[in-house]
Image (tube, rainbow, N blue to C red):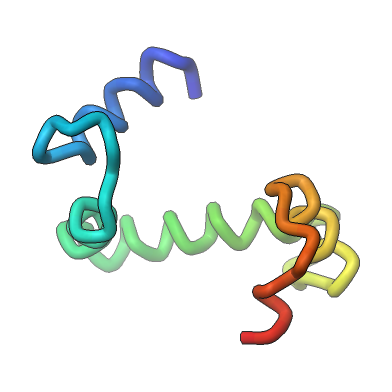
Length: 79
């Protein structure tokens, strides 16, 4: 995505114009999607973690992605 596309997406999500996306605005983004769009978004998110593209997320892949995101505590592993 280009910076311009990201800015446009942000403005669309920021319904109240306060330059921040709160949980309600974030949730509305997903609530308004049809099943096909929702599945595509989930697949895209999954693919971010499936680094080697084998259709599975290994503990190593999860660790790499969480470190890239700056989460060294790996809180997601406790879910």
